[in-house]
Every structure is written in C-alpha cells, then in structure tokens.
Image (cartoon, rainbow, N blue to C red; front, side):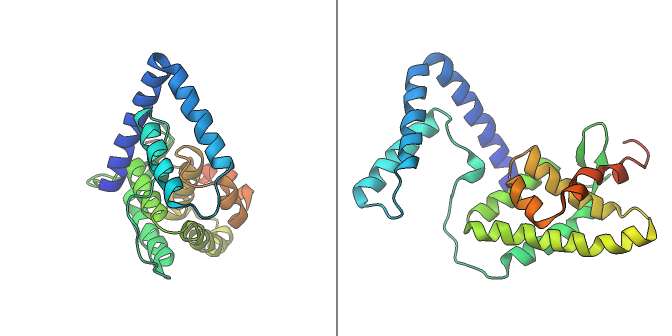
Amino acid sequence: MTIGQMTLLRRHISHELNKNAKFNGKHLAAALRALNDATMLRMPERTSQAENEYLERLASHLKLCGIYDPLKQIYIQNPSSQNLPLFLALSIISTMPKFTYSRSVGCLVAKSKQTVDCVPFTYGVFVFLSQFHMDYTEDFIESLCTYIKSASFPVAQSGKVDVDLANLLTFLDFASIELECVDRETLVKNLPEFILTQYKDLLTLGPEK
C-alpha cells in the first residue's frame, strides 16, 4: 500500500510539473521530448560511461519537466528470485476477499472494516514487479490467468457467481485499462478476450454498492 500511495503521489506531481512546463516552457518541454524520442531510437544494447552520464542528465531534466512515468521507474536493483511471480500471484488471490465491486465507482473498493485501497494497492504490486526483469511481470500475469481459467470451469458448470474470481478479473482489467500498469496484449495473450469483456455481467447481478 505504501509503495502504491507514493507512486500515486509521484504521478500527481509529475502531471503538475508537465502541465506547468507546457505552459511556462513549452519550447523546452518540446525539445526534451524530441531529444528523448531520438535517444530511444538510437539507444544501443550496451552504453559507454559517457553515454550513461548523458542519459542521467537527460533523465534529470525530463523529471523536472514531468516527462516520466513513476510506475516504470527502477528505484532499486534486486537479486533474481525464480518463484517470486508465483508467490506474488498467490498473495493477490488471497487478498481478493477484502474487496467488493462498486457499480457507482466502476472498480473494486474495500469491504467494511478493511483499510486496503484498490488503486494504490494495484500500483504497489506493479511498481514492485518493475524492479525486476520484465519477465517477472509476464510470469505474474500468466500465473493469475492460469488460476482464472482453471477456476472458471466449476463456476460455469454450477452457474453460481464466484465473487472473488470476478474481483480478480476486475483487478487485472482495471490494471490494464484504467491504470495502464500492464500491457493489454499481454493480458489477452493469456486470457480469452470474451472473459475480460463479459465478466462484469456477473458483478452487476448483486445489489448496487
């Protein structure tokens, strides 16, 4: 939660910096964007010491103008842990009973007497994953989607609504569309599109919250 709250605060700050840069220094902001795009196009696989120093200076100027995404920043370097995506996926699955779907808000909200908030919680999960290789995020999504597909068969046969399963689908859908924490193509690659588009029909069967 703390990581997500700090990321949310950083995103608000970067938005304000970017807005002020566009009004008060639009030529500088445009030049930095063009320089950043050109740098990304010619970025080699391995950089020299001089190129690293240039990238650090460029990153510093981009941050001052709010041209960066706190969600994709690498803050610390962690040792590899092979089973981390699976453990994190199991942790997310066990957390879903703490949430309930709100039709008025259109996303998950904390149940009564619960202190967890969906937005900073989601941000925290994916910022933590971004500190590792991108394969960790893909393995995490794959583990959750595998669980969803395996748990969907009993639900389809019984015809009963599994609220926790629907909450997990909401978590992934909200993370990919609203918060842009994960690429939609990565999600669709592991989960049929019709599940992502029809699961909300199950959530809206109950009383409105």
